[in-house]
Length: 178
Image 1 (cartoon, rainbow, N blue to C red):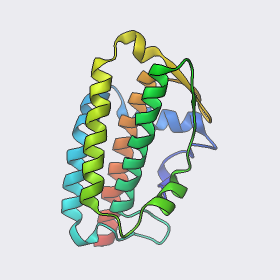
Image 2 (tube, rainbow, N blue to C red):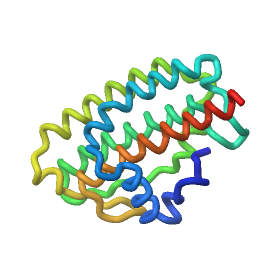
Image 3 (cartoon, rainbow, N blue to C red):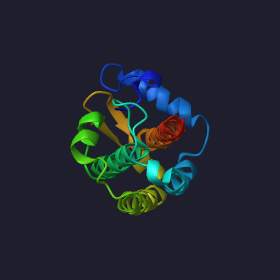
Image 4 (cartoon, one colour):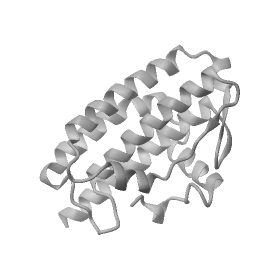
């Protein structure tokens, strides 16, 4: 399960969730944070070794499930970025991260496959960001729970999201190590 203890619920408190993720980013460059995240995930998976799929508690995510969620988020945001740029105020569908992890990820996931997918998607999303001008970055989509979100805001949110779930995965690994 996602780490609700230290993050506002994205559906029940969408504004609080946004503020939380933006607070984790602070004044740091979201492009730099996002560019560094795939290597951080790769290092964490290597560090976890045989413990990568072990949950610290029955209802908490393992390192592997945290990584799976990061990949899911990158897939979702890849679409959102493109909808925002190509359409006028498109709807941005929310998703239940716990359901996605439960249905799409588990012990059988290949961490190397997930890492490769994250690296490829992230590289494509960063390239899109770099070639998008200031006007494009102000374009908005309408999130189902949070309302209007610009490309710039979405890009900053995913950088905070990276920090949150990398930290969650590190805590999971510490807990399973005892």
